[in-house]
Image (cartoon, rainbow, N blue to C red; front, side, top):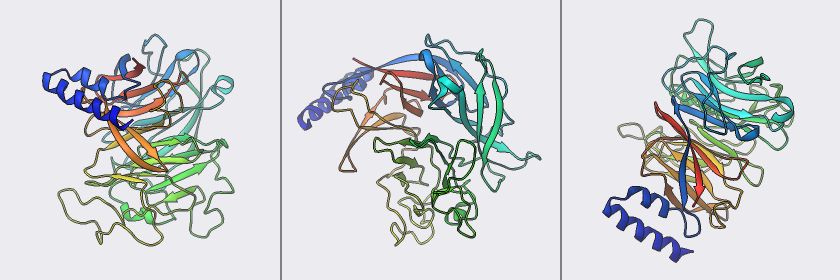
Length: 380
C-alpha cells in the first residue's frame, strides 16, 4: 500500500508540472480507486446541508434561507414554502438538514438555522422538525425542537450539524458565537456545546447533566468552539470536527459530560498572532483532540465511508471538506488515530461545505459558491 501511494504521488507531481490538474486529482485517490467528479446539480446559492430522499432525490439547503429538492436527474426544484424566519447574514442562515431515518414512512425533515429573536437584534442556533408535503412543495407541521440559549447579537459561529444516533436521539453542534467563548466552559448556557435531544425536543434522561443544579439538561459535551462537521462513526459514536482560531482545527469524539477545553486549551492562536488565554495545549480534566490541523484548513462536512465502492483502501476512511484550501481530505485511521491524509478535488479549489455517503455507497459533496454544485464522486 505504501509503495502504491508513493507512486501515485510521484505521478501527481509530474502531471501537475505538465499542467493537467484534473488528472492529478484523479491519481491522488488510491491505486485501486480513482474517483471521477460528476456534477449532479448546479446553480445552488451557497449550499450548506445535504440529505438523501427516496428515489434518488436529495434535499439541499442554501445559506441565504432556501431549501430545495434536487431530482435524481439533477433538476433543482423551486424553494420549499413553510420555512420559519431566518437570520441570514455572515455565517448565519439556513444551515444543516437531515431526513429522518424513517423518512419513507413519516416524511420528517430536521433542519437547523440561525433563529432571530422577536426584535431581530439577536439570534441563536435552532433545530426544527417538519413534514415534507405529499407534493414535495412545502414544509408542514413545523415545530421548533430546540433553541440555543442565550440569543446573542452575532453573525458568527453557529455550529449547526445534526446527527441522528442509533437510539433515535439527535445530536446538534453549537458554536461559541465568537464573542462569548468563555461561556463554552459554563454549563448554564448552550454556547460552545454539543446537545442531545429526543425527536420531540426533550432532554433524554441519560444525558450526563440531567438533574445537576446549574446545568442545562440538553448538554452532551462542552468546551467546543465551532463544530461545522459531525457524523456517526462505524462504532456508533459521535465524531465531530471544529474550527480552531488561527490554527488548531480539531477532530473530536465527544463522550458524555466531557470537557473539550476551549478556550482554555487550544493548538491555535489569536488572529494576527498572540496566545489565547494562558497559551496552553493541555490541562487535567480536559480532552485532547484526536487530531488537529496547523495551519487551519477550515473544515466543514464530515462522513465515514462504510461502502466498498472505491476499493478496500478507502473503506472505513473519514472524509472532511476544507473551506480554506478547497479540497476534500481523505483520512486514513489506524488504531483510532490519523495515519495519513490525502487531498482530493483540489484542482477546482472550490470551498467544500458538506460531504455525505449516499444510499448508493458513493460520496457526494457540496461546494460553497454563488453557483454551488452538488457533486458525485464516481469510481473510475
